[in-house]
Amino acid sequence: MAPGTARNSYRNVGADLHCAIRDPHERAAAIAADLALQRIRARHPAMAIRARTDDHVPAPLLRFGTDHLDLSVVPPTVTGNTVVSSVDRGPADLELGGGRVRFTSGFPGLSPVQALTHGVHGIGDTVTLSVTTSPDVLDAAGLARYVALLHAAVASL
Image (spheres, rainbow, N blue to C red):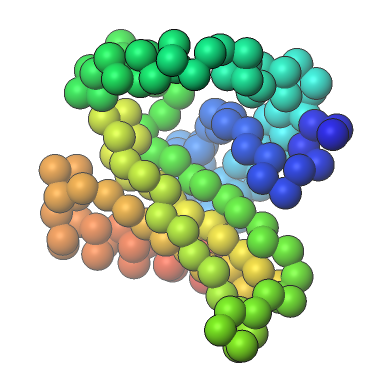
Protein backbone atom coordinates (compact mmCIF):
# COMPACT_ATOMS: atom_id res chain seq x y z
CA MET A 1 0.00 0.00 0.00
CA ALA A 2 1.33 3.46 -0.87
CA PRO A 3 2.40 5.65 2.07
CA GLY A 4 -0.47 7.61 3.52
CA THR A 5 -3.23 5.74 1.67
CA ALA A 6 -4.36 3.49 4.51
CA ARG A 7 -7.42 4.62 6.47
CA ASN A 8 -5.32 4.48 9.63
CA SER A 9 -2.18 6.17 8.38
CA TYR A 10 -0.54 7.69 11.43
CA ARG A 11 2.30 10.18 11.13
CA ASN A 12 3.91 12.32 13.82
CA VAL A 13 5.47 15.69 13.01
CA GLY A 14 6.59 18.71 14.96
CA ALA A 15 5.20 22.09 13.94
CA ASP A 16 6.11 25.60 15.03
CA LEU A 17 3.11 27.28 16.67
CA HIS A 18 4.51 30.76 15.86
CA CYS A 19 3.57 32.13 19.28
CA ALA A 20 5.26 35.47 18.55
CA ILE A 21 2.71 36.25 15.83
CA ARG A 22 -0.23 38.02 17.50
CA ASP A 23 -2.63 38.35 14.56
CA PRO A 24 -4.67 35.11 14.54
CA HIS A 25 -5.00 35.06 10.73
CA GLU A 26 -1.26 35.56 10.18
CA ARG A 27 -0.48 33.00 12.86
CA ALA A 28 -2.87 30.45 11.34
CA ALA A 29 -1.28 31.02 7.92
CA ALA A 30 2.23 30.55 9.35
CA ILE A 31 1.21 27.34 11.13
CA ALA A 32 -0.54 26.07 7.97
CA ALA A 33 2.61 26.75 5.92
CA ASP A 34 4.72 24.86 8.45
CA LEU A 35 2.28 21.95 8.45
CA ALA A 36 2.31 21.87 4.63
CA LEU A 37 6.09 21.42 4.71
CA GLN A 38 5.77 18.73 7.39
CA ARG A 39 3.16 16.88 5.30
CA ILE A 40 5.61 16.71 2.40
CA ARG A 41 8.22 15.26 4.75
CA ALA A 42 5.73 12.83 6.29
CA ARG A 43 4.75 11.48 2.84
CA HIS A 44 8.31 10.47 2.03
CA PRO A 45 8.57 6.67 1.64
CA ALA A 46 11.30 6.56 4.29
CA MET A 47 8.79 7.72 6.90
CA ALA A 48 6.48 4.81 6.07
CA ILE A 49 9.39 2.38 6.33
CA ARG A 50 10.40 3.89 9.67
CA ALA A 51 6.82 3.44 10.93
CA ARG A 52 6.96 -0.28 10.11
CA THR A 53 10.13 -1.11 12.06
CA ASP A 54 8.11 -2.73 14.85
CA ASP A 55 6.87 -5.27 12.30
CA HIS A 56 10.35 -6.82 12.36
CA VAL A 57 10.89 -7.00 16.11
CA PRO A 58 9.84 -10.27 17.78
CA ALA A 59 6.82 -9.84 20.05
CA PRO A 60 8.64 -11.02 23.23
CA LEU A 61 11.31 -8.36 22.67
CA LEU A 62 8.66 -5.66 22.18
CA ARG A 63 6.91 -6.82 25.35
CA PHE A 64 10.21 -6.76 27.27
CA GLY A 65 10.83 -3.20 26.11
CA THR A 66 7.37 -1.92 27.03
CA ASP A 67 7.44 -3.70 30.40
CA HIS A 68 10.72 -1.96 31.26
CA LEU A 69 9.84 1.48 29.96
CA ASP A 70 9.74 4.03 32.78
CA LEU A 71 7.03 6.49 31.76
CA SER A 72 7.88 8.78 34.67
CA VAL A 73 11.24 9.70 33.10
CA VAL A 74 11.04 12.93 31.14
CA PRO A 75 13.59 13.08 28.30
CA PRO A 76 15.99 16.05 28.20
CA THR A 77 14.44 17.33 24.96
CA VAL A 78 11.01 16.89 23.40
CA THR A 79 9.44 17.90 20.09
CA GLY A 80 6.73 19.79 21.96
CA ASN A 81 4.66 19.78 25.11
CA THR A 82 1.30 19.86 23.40
CA VAL A 83 -0.23 17.57 20.83
CA VAL A 84 -2.83 18.16 18.16
CA SER A 85 -4.30 14.93 16.84
CA SER A 86 -6.29 15.43 13.68
CA VAL A 87 -8.59 12.77 12.25
CA ASP A 88 -10.72 13.16 9.13
CA ARG A 89 -13.29 10.39 9.32
CA GLY A 90 -14.51 11.09 5.80
CA PRO A 91 -18.02 11.72 4.53
CA ALA A 92 -20.94 11.77 6.96
CA ASP A 93 -22.15 8.37 5.81
CA LEU A 94 -21.61 6.37 9.02
CA GLU A 95 -24.43 4.87 11.03
CA LEU A 96 -24.46 3.80 14.66
CA GLY A 97 -27.41 2.01 16.24
CA GLY A 98 -29.55 2.76 13.19
CA GLY A 99 -28.90 6.51 13.34
CA ARG A 100 -26.66 8.73 11.27
CA VAL A 101 -23.40 9.81 12.94
CA ARG A 102 -23.45 13.60 13.10
CA PHE A 103 -20.18 14.29 14.94
CA THR A 104 -17.11 12.48 16.16
CA SER A 105 -14.52 13.18 18.81
CA GLY A 106 -11.38 11.88 20.39
CA PHE A 107 -9.19 12.71 23.32
CA PRO A 108 -5.47 12.15 22.73
CA GLY A 109 -3.70 10.73 25.76
CA LEU A 110 -1.50 12.60 28.19
CA SER A 111 2.07 11.69 29.06
CA PRO A 112 4.96 13.25 30.99
CA VAL A 113 5.99 15.09 27.80
CA GLN A 114 2.51 15.77 26.43
CA ALA A 115 0.73 17.74 29.12
CA LEU A 116 -1.91 19.40 26.94
CA THR A 117 -3.55 17.58 24.06
CA HIS A 118 -6.03 18.67 21.41
CA GLY A 119 -8.26 16.59 19.21
CA VAL A 120 -9.53 17.87 15.86
CA HIS A 121 -11.98 15.31 14.52
CA GLY A 122 -14.12 15.73 11.45
CA ILE A 123 -16.88 13.85 9.75
CA GLY A 124 -18.59 15.37 6.75
CA ASP A 125 -18.72 19.13 7.28
CA THR A 126 -18.67 18.91 11.10
CA VAL A 127 -15.47 19.38 13.09
CA THR A 128 -15.24 18.76 16.84
CA LEU A 129 -12.42 20.15 18.97
CA SER A 130 -11.36 18.62 22.28
CA VAL A 131 -8.83 19.67 24.90
CA THR A 132 -7.38 17.35 27.55
CA THR A 133 -4.95 18.26 30.31
CA SER A 134 -4.10 17.52 33.91
CA PRO A 135 -4.86 19.66 36.98
CA ASP A 136 -1.10 19.56 37.57
CA VAL A 137 -0.71 21.59 34.36
CA LEU A 138 -3.81 23.80 34.31
CA ASP A 139 -6.29 24.30 37.13
CA ALA A 140 -9.99 24.55 36.30
CA ALA A 141 -9.90 28.34 35.93
CA GLY A 142 -6.81 28.21 33.71
CA LEU A 143 -8.37 25.53 31.54
CA ALA A 144 -11.61 27.50 31.22
CA ARG A 145 -9.62 30.60 30.17
CA TYR A 146 -7.57 28.56 27.68
CA VAL A 147 -10.68 27.00 26.13
CA ALA A 148 -12.30 30.45 25.89
CA LEU A 149 -9.20 31.81 24.12
CA LEU A 150 -9.16 28.78 21.80
CA HIS A 151 -12.86 29.25 21.05
CA ALA A 152 -12.33 32.95 20.27
CA ALA A 153 -9.32 32.19 18.05
CA VAL A 154 -11.23 29.57 16.06
CA ALA A 155 -14.29 31.81 15.79
CA SER A 156 -12.12 34.62 14.40
CA LEU A 157 -10.98 32.46 11.50
